[in-house]
Length: 161
Image (cartoon, rainbow, N blue to C red):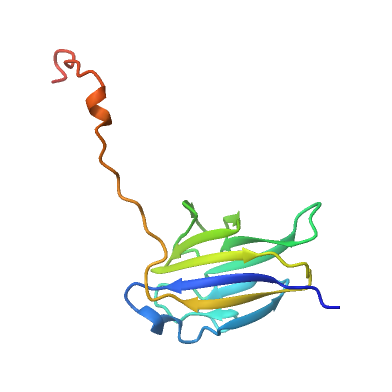
């Protein structure tokens, strides 16, 4: 009996190029437990032809955590040129981060949302790709509050006013 595969549901968005940026992305990609490479190079498992993307830009690396019977994933930056933003952290060359259940990534103009759905197979995983027509990541603006009004307004010391 086959064990269910871990699923990565990946949504992709590019603000200026739109869906054409992802013309070569398959709807489904099954992969073994070696690192899955994303970039514009011929050896990348997920090839994106974008000018600011490195040949090997990043990798999704499955691994088995101690005491767990399911695959976990980390993302490693392989580009020397740029950085990758993951869940609020900025990663540079060879830095990596463990992925949680829902992950927001941004790099080279691409916005990516990765949802990890656990399976029990330790031999492979599968990615399902979806191209989003709208932004996936919103950076919240600072909210105005009247909190400042509750703080007593003291005069600054002489010379600082």
